[in-house]
Length: 232
Image 1 (tube, rainbow, N blue to C red):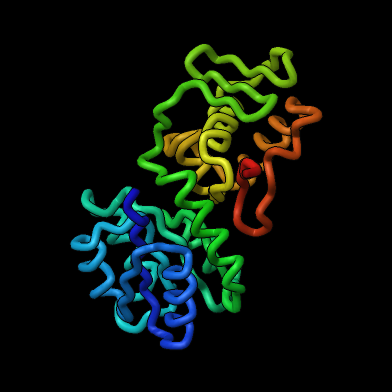
Image 2 (image 1 turned 120 degrees about the horizontal axis):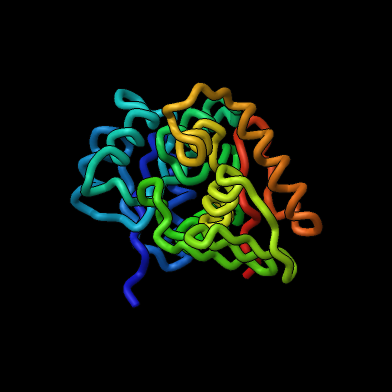
């Protein structure tokens, strides 16, 4: 099997060297660039399996790079992990909101970075808003959106249409963080007048109905929600 290909877009030389060394040690094929414009072009030619993207880049910043990559038919399905020095909630929300799949904040340990990389590569990209598999099984939770059925610990559970779509989306991408805005657009849709806290209400409803499995839906403070990643 060919090694996974990773593109690193980072302008701080010392951090870039640490990232490259640890990725190479794990057996990945790595290409590194130091500015956003070159990163966009390299992503198109290198066709990586994953992009590690610093948000604080000179010139074309990481948010704009993410927008361009996700808006391009050639690179749109490539998973992106943002690297932010600040660790501020606003940066994380903004990055996830324009399509990033995960984030890591500086300073980070090599072990944490590699764990995030492996997790994102394992679950693959999120393409568009529609999930291909109508039936999702996560442990004792079975979600069948086509039949509008949810089974928890062997028992049928009644969910509203919005709750069903919310649970199905989260369960289809364990470990992936979704912002409230992303959940609103995919679960409720953009046609209705909604506020971000509507999602909190739906999440509370789903958790209550999941009963003993309620901890599978995790809150990422200041960002949004995710379905608990599967243990390997």
